[in-house]
Structure formats: structure tokens, C-alpha cells
Image (cartoon, rainbow, N blue to C red):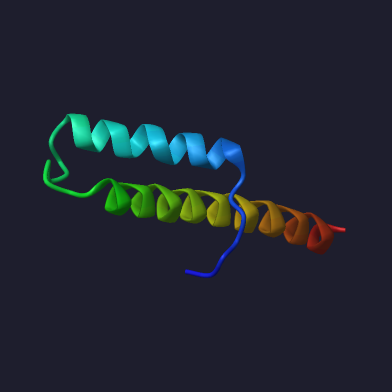
Length: 66
């Protein structure tokens, strides 16, 4: 994954999701904090990328309707 700055909103969403997965024991309790941090960064990146893509698609769709 490239070094793209992820917005705080998506970082918080990713953190909440990873915490939930960890608390509900979907993730191995032996995972290192570094691994959980990487997972949070990756999920935040994916969430932000999907939101950005959806916004660009909405703009493109609006332009095509004109």
C-alpha cells in the first residue's frame, strides 16, 4: 500500500472495526499491536478509497446527464 494520508474519520471507523473484531475474537489474541495497526491503516485506506471513488462516480454521472 502506498503512503497515502488517510482522513481521521476513516481512521476512527477502521479503529472501531478492528476493536470490534478483536473483542469478538474474530482476530487472534496473539496478534502483535503492529499487525493490528497495519490492519487499521489498511481498512481506513480501503474505506476512504471507496468513498472517494463513489464521489467521483457521482460527479461523472451528473455530468453525463447534462
